[in-house]
Amino acid sequence: MVDVPRRLWRYDIGIFFCSISLMHAQEIANGKWQIVVLSPEMLQSRRFVEGVLRKSDFSARCLSVFIDEAHCCSHWGANFRKKYGSIGIVRAFLPRSTPLIAVTATLTPRVHKDLLQKLQFDPSSYQFVNIGNDRPNVSQIVRAMEHAMNTFHDIDFVIPDGVQKPEDVPKTFVYYDDIAGGSELCDHLSARVPEDFRHIGIVRPYNAAFSQKYRRDVLRLFKAGIIRVLVCTDAAGMVRSLNFICISSIQ
Image (cartoon, helix red, strand yellow):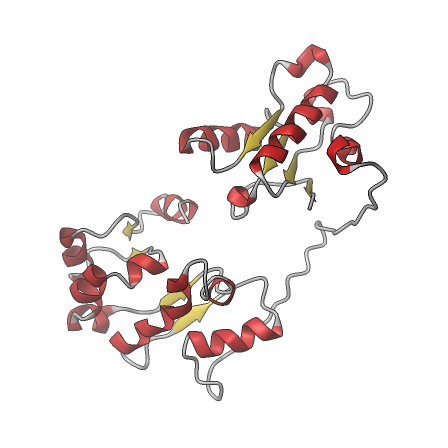
């Protein structure tokens, strides 16, 4: 979500991305910003509903509502973040002709059906575009485990034998489902790095326990190729604008 405003700012597009104060609500309602980026909770907050959505000038000016990662409305709307499941109520404050665009790369038939209901699409008149999500440069490979999981030997291929320099290690995200286990895996992979350049720290952890500054710096170093392997939890699950050679998962 943070990455979108940064990209648009480069093109001098007026975009609002912040918490909603009374002043901000008035600015949005008055049309100061071309694009307003909101979380579901902010969108449905009393301040935004009363200060923006209920204003006739805003509703007449609003060109469209765009929902990214729309599958979250179904996956998260029941328990984890319930406001995702009620985003569709925004339609009550806007003209019927205001387009609502929902995009996702993980739309199963069940989620598709659920989104029609949650986002209040008319099943007989909405437009559905499926361009597919096949990516020739991405493949899924399942490896049978040959060793005890706590030895981590089945993930040794991430740091190939005989590497001579950091660039010989493919840039890799390794996902682990808990922070403590990920820390142990990070230590294991670091021990496989030759001593000549182990001090550089080409293997680093990335999870919600670290500060935003640490995570921001680590992603910058990963993108630059200085860090080669990130051992992550799902805190890195929606990172954008990075090139991956491999994504591995341990469950």
